[in-house]
Amino acid sequence: MLNDELSILALYGLYVAITLVLQATGAMQQLGMGYLLSSRDEGRTASGMAARLERALWNSVSAMALFAPAVLILEARGAFSDATLMAAQVFLIARVIYVPTYAFGVIGVRSLAWAAGFFATIILYLLAL
Image 1 (tube, rainbow, N blue to C red):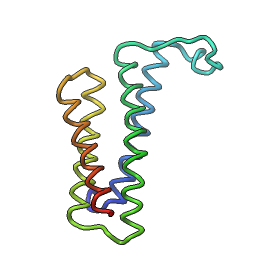
Image 2: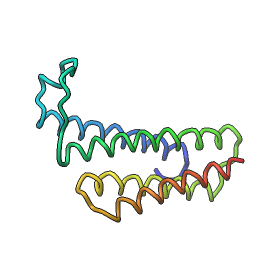
Image 3: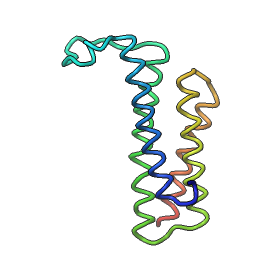
Image 4: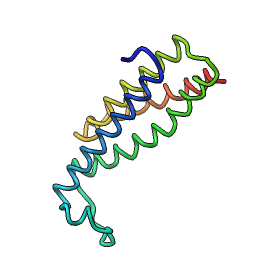
């Protein structure tokens, strides 16, 4: 499954969707279904793990916004290689580590995982040039 860049992109999309479900479940437990179904004019915020999952989710969406174009540019140019596959694999593994370490408040590992995913994305862009 981790043998081509487009599959890795699809897997990461599913991972972000799972993160969304986990975040929504935590928010529902804290804020209540009524609030989540409302227009949310009253500003309530989750705390603890639910809040960390929300931040991890938005960071994951930002990472997707950077990662997806790099993969699609490489696909359009027919420029996939062993190096692009390795960078995409590093990205996915780093992001899979990032979310739970953020959710559980693991300092240090979370930042290293973020950095590994970010730099893997930068490598993809450099290889696309």
